[in-house]
Image 1 (spheres, rainbow, N blue to C red):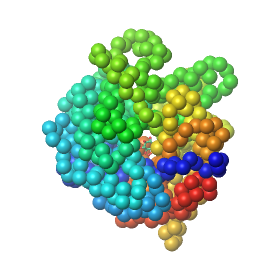
Image 2: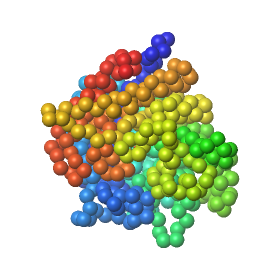
Image 3: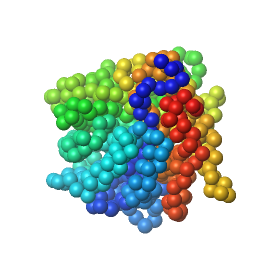
Image 4: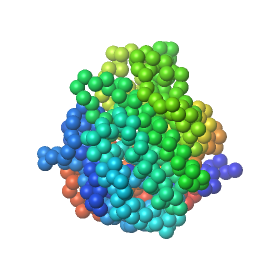
Length: 477
Ligand code: BG6
């Protein structure tokens, strides 16, 4: 075997999400979704945290999802560019409210279903395998208003109907499915992760864990149905990954780092091993909290574990046992201390390619299932030169180092890796900040933070570079 390449049939591609690229937020009978009411600007974080109630759009705010990069109308051109790079797979998410505008509709919306048929047909025309995220940070607003979103067990039924509908409809077009994007995000940004808006005095921790249980059951039910509808389907979980390092070699710091990692592993432990880990049961005891469960929940989780483990990786994290030291990072999506050994992106995300190899090994040791890196990349400001060209060497450098680390994990450590879909293969709206300026793409989209621009697509330098990477199956970096 050539140690300088990846396994045959390795799935090279790129990743997007509906709310960050489609636009057309009410077109084709689409209903309003949580992501459509999250504004850009200073109110974005309070809304994403579930602390500020914004159940409708108003005229004072700018909502980046409403137009995004208008993939809704431009998908043919965009997929043609992905094909030109040689993509074997394209990760996209379906917008729940394109298919069930209110979430509890009796019948699905044919126009929404047809849109994704067209998108999949366009991919398949070029031999690109769709990799579908069923829920990427969206919940029908109607279900937030009527039942409080994932805090209610009723959500499971609506999610299952949605899954049954799409599994049946696309069973001959899609094989790879992810049940929830970055399922652990629910603990960090509860409105974006689960549509949770907290009431005054509510116990936020227990609400979040109950919502997590409801999503875990929904994910297991979806896995069960998927395998019945098409035994060839491969169902994955999806973790916002990145190992936590200890600030010093003090055992207290090492312990703290382990606890931090468990906060995230918790979800995948259930989805992949099929039961709540003991450390979580003990944590619930200490919280004086009893999960509301039904009789067959445990069997359902046990019998319907995922086929593969997908994850996003942008950075490693660093923590300390000393609350005074950690306090400086509180309030960030993933609190992390500054690691003096690492450089950081313009948004302060620390760049750690070896951290990817470490993360891959940790996940593979823990679960012993194939891994899939479904997000990775560098969010950076791109400045076109006078001819409109973008020489994004910094992005190439970031990706090159991360692909090398992947290679080592696969060829030196024996990790089973199915594929790699860097995030935002075409520039799109940033999930955390709502900006366009934070770009990840191989393809530039002419649009700024305020929503101005022609939406014209152009190739960056990284476009040709990634094309060669794919052509040579990772040999030429
Ligand atoms: C992940 C999400 O958290 O990271 C994506 O799944 C997101 O939706 C990506 O866009 C990058 O984060 P950001 O905040 O730079 O867009």
